[in-house]
Amino acid sequence: MTQALIKQIIESSVCEDGMVETSVKGVQLFRITSPLNCAPAVYEPTIVAIVSGAKEAILDGKRYIYNNNQYMCCSMSMPVEAGTPTASPENPLLGVYISLDTKVMTELAIAMEGAVGVFRKPEGASLPPGFSLSHWDDAFTEALYRLLIVTNSSSDSAILGDGRLRELYYAVLKGEAGESAKRAFGLGNEIAKSIEYLSSRLNDTFTIEDIAAQVGMSRAVFHRKFKQATTMSPLQFVKSMRLNTAAMKIAGGMNVNNAAMEVGYVSSSQFSREFKRMYGQSPKHWTQSQQIPKGRVT
Image (tube, rainbow, N blue to C red):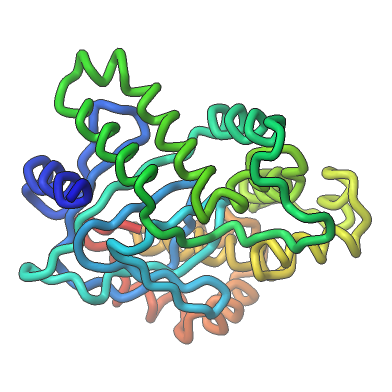
């Protein structure tokens, strides 16, 4: 019932395809009625909750489809391919996009880890992935509804918005995606910190030893924990982030050589080879068919 009320709020707020900002910072509503094949994207730390239709994401070759049964929690920046292949006017994609505030998530995660008996992870258990799907539980559904209600009033959102957003974050941390989020934002979040470091320096030259040293790990331990969190080796991750970021820039109209240089490639031929290996087409041919459509939601 509550999810149906959330859907009504979105339908009444979004009349055309695209993203609509709400009065609460970091909370957007979206509607898509055209099918979009999966294309390179970079997921930032976000929650995406679908109330109608389905979204698709491909991470390291593995395909994930989520709809109104599961919401997506990305707790670290991740290179993916994302699309809405089943969207149509008869079955529109409707949902909520919520950016995760690092400061607030960190405060909550550390507070929860400090509480006696709250979700302790067994010693030696593997690190959960930075991309996860979680079933809509009652706590998440109610928190999302309470958050969206205040977006109808600028005064309500100004006074209550931050608190309602914090309530939603807490519901996420308590849900199925909570362990992943706590690993990214709580104590022992070295891998998340390394990803933040890498993502902000895509055009720099560095070694795995350099990054491991940044978070106080040996190369072997860092490599193992990084792959547990992202499903990719550090080198694979950096290459995917660079190529996906470049592809997004190219699809947005940037010159191929400039896009390659902005993500750290000094050789256009190397960029073209790796681009074709990743996407099956040269940058030139790929550009002709991959202009970002209006209203695209990654």
